[in-house]
Image (cartoon, rainbow, N blue to C red; front, side, top):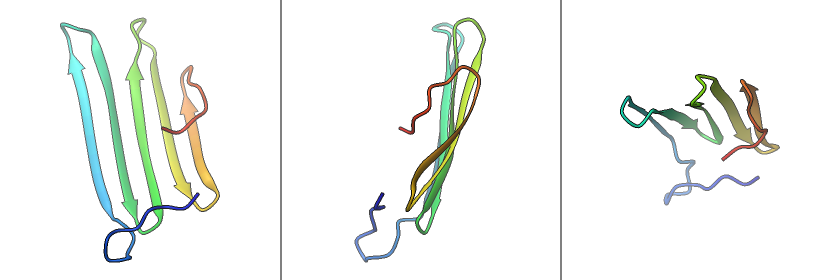
Length: 78
């Protein structure tokens, strides 16, 4: 995996997060990620209609994406 660099040739460093929690629609999900140099890592989650919370924590680097799951979650990075 080759990570994209910023315009000046340096690694892009950033941090973001969002969460959606809407009682009316029943939506409850979120994502947080930060990247320092060539190491992005983050977490995303969703609460299913039955109340089960699925969480994926991940980090990525030269040897690919390494997800760690809890709940009933498929193994992949987005």
